[in-house]
Length: 426
Image 1 (cartoon, one colour):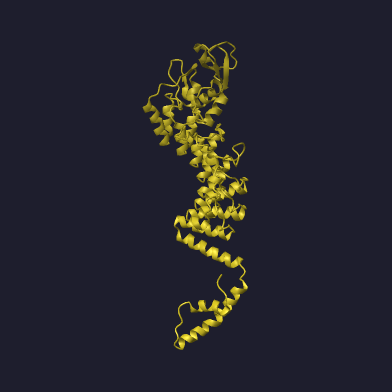
Image 2: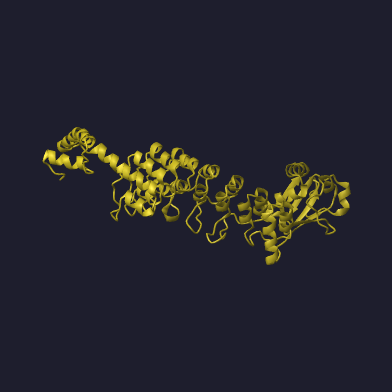
């Protein structure tokens, strides 16, 4: 391709002869294909506007030409007639006063060594915009290595924009064993600006990494509410989309104890609090296992979650809380009405799970809860009432006998009661 600085009144073909240029007022910039077909024209005013918006006129021209030739500015070279290159920081007045034909040369990406790939990655990690710009101008393929992934992890928005402008693949997989994309990484690390940029640049919000997680799953697991809100805007993954082990975003937020995310997912995004994962566990099960009391309190009291729902082993959230020694959660669930006598598929109660865990506080609490339940639910028999009355009457007599010199055997009162009533304990 060739660029010519042209007078709009000139009607000839090809580029102006250099001998005519001093006689013309340069008002237009013409872009021609190698075939001689006109590709584009840029007026002096348009060039000035582009330069004002971009700050650098040559860079502005290259970005404009990118839309036409489909090659990033890093692979473009604009040359004067003598073969010297126009630098990106060339002043607009110097460009307009040059009165020379310009030639556009498109370069292939240069061969790149492993050391140069590492050099780009290091520049990205250091958030060195100037170094990244210089490396891309070699020109170096930004998709060799994982430079955009590095920028997503570090939250380097300006560097990420440079890499995408240079042609880095937005949805490239391959970061670590999970094969995550840049959007997965930016979401997991809570870099909202980078997340927003990548999505607007075409990143796929519903894309799964190797563990079956979308960027939304990762944002929920790590407690990045602002990222969660953004990812749920417009078209994207379902709010109840299962991820690893069938866990939905609500499962993951509940297990991690991110109360703000849990509240948002349920109250604003409409997440299902009764949904089961592959182990038939609800978000309350996971919150119980992981000791997330405030999450459980919200799910049960405000969201209406079932506290006696069973997982694949027939265990309730109370079973899991006791098995993991979660005293405060066990106390809350019992107070909320959890069935302390329910047995799992192995015929074990919550008390037996607590005993196996070896947590004396939970065991003591459950024993007392059983006693309280019996007191509240069992009606005393007439025999029990009679024995109680006799105990009250005989205790003073036995005490008087002791004062008089007689020493009743330990438990004499209890032995005397059935004898007096002529009934047994059975």
